[in-house]
Length: 107
Image (cartoon, rainbow, N blue to C red; front, side, top):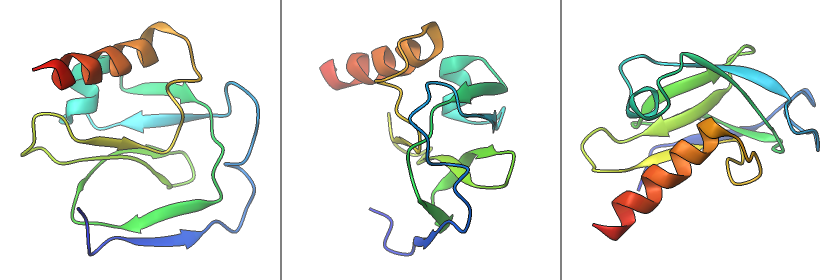
């Protein structure tokens, strides 16, 4: 899917937490993710120790410390990858993302 992507182990522990709300992310207003959520910033959970550092996919969201939090392929009907766990955040915004995924899967 993205053969040219590169990952690295994060040097800090800022993205490893069992808390529900860990950090804020900024969403690109020209992204599919923004179209779905209609939010420029949201607070997400975070349970990872690796980060994507390069990819040919569109980078559509970042954390305040520069970690890529979402990628997408604008040429596909629905191709969004996120670093957080929307299935664990039972709130309106993450439900929008999950429901959009389910809607696209049915078509």
